[in-house]
Length: 337
Image (cartoon, rainbow, N blue to C red; front, side, top):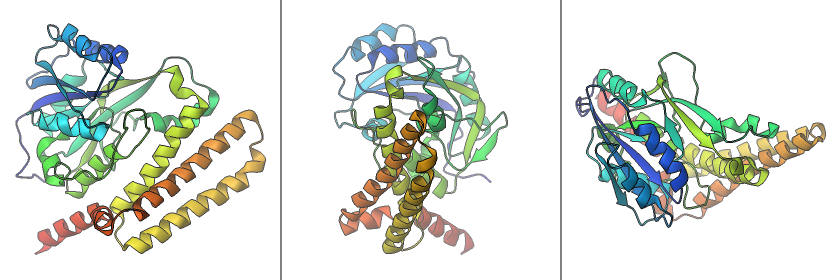
């Protein structure tokens, strides 16, 4: 099935949103040197989100080595605002969100442009995300590799239901159709606050617009994880943010009333709490107790997400609850009329 709003021209802008991470940004830009864009066009845009370190100097160091590298500034703090700025400040038909701690394999750009040119009806796609640890992580981290945006669905090209934000490539026309450019409902990381859900919202809203999400295994990037991000405290904060994001994403997809969503959210949190309590006597080892506290933080995150929605104005809740299911329903009704 093809979609008349999809632009078949294949140009790609790599958008790198960054906040006080110049050391790793340098490595990300280094991985873009020498990339072959194949038959398509490539641009690189760094979005400086109120950096106070040497980010601007790092970008200047690479302007001669990366054709069409430029930068812009976004003063509203937060990854969602920075991504929006990146989209509005770029012109390519496809936009790749590459984090400032991601290292692209040498053929990543060529493979991405090749897939985009062959699949112009695709809404968004992402590749294999390999975790690149600064040091081997503690044993308790291995159960939560998903929290660091690991993505590996195997060696086969396939449609998927969602994508991680690291290395997600979106079709500009699909993003416009999804309504995300006009209204963003969820935020991602804000400064040092581990807020989550913005990238999941993008994927969900593109899918609800009737466009496929794809996993493209030959687009490989390495997500660098510094030692500081494997501490127990950091992982608890990260998982708590993901718990809140999970609840908010369920709200976006919820097909029924607000109150039925509230009841379902409480039921899910209670079920998780019961399961965690039952597992507690079996987790008396050091690592078991750490895992227990991490699981508790996921449930606490769910409840904080619920509290956030309950505290919203009714108009805000109407915008949030079921936005993707309503859009999908309207699309199906239009197709059947």
